[in-house]
Image 1 (cartoon, rainbow, N blue to C red):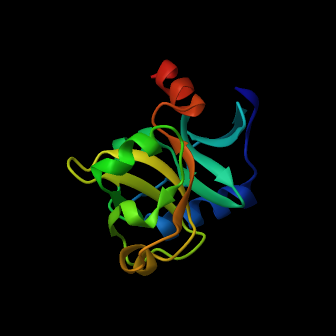
Image 2: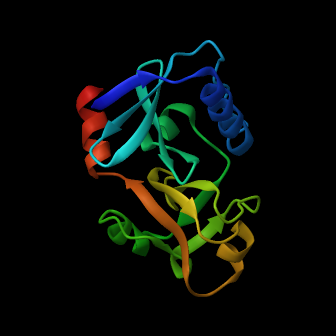
Amino acid sequence: MKHRHTIKTKERKRFISQINEFFPEINISPKSNIETAMIEDYAVFLVDGEVEFILKNDVFIPTIPFILKHNLTSNFVTVDEGAIRFIANGADIMIPGIVDADLNIKKGDPVWVKEEKHGKPLATGIALTSGEEMKNKNRGKAVETLHYVGDKLWKHISKSL
């Protein structure tokens, strides 16, 4: 982990506000210690010492361990079994593999991807279309994958658990 430091008050407010907007079931305390750092090619945010978010294009995307810890219910995309092997190799999420999605998702929102059978998280990323389009269209990319089970960030976080 490189360049680790506590964020300023203004950035802290923006961070907490955006998390509350996209994941209303999460309550990050304003008293939490929030830091930023670099892990591999990822700009990450730590909450009370745990890597919980990736920053990409001014959007905070949750890490898979964060999703597991907090049992998120919003901003999800559900994929069929056939998509799992592609996602496990870092592929973006294609619309034909999607079986369900949160209808509140808008293009550019942070999302997490889960498998259909057990609901376990597979990846996180940024929505390339709305949740409604993900459910109703037949082709195209739906999510730009930024973090997935088995990637460099996953391995780094798993070592520290």
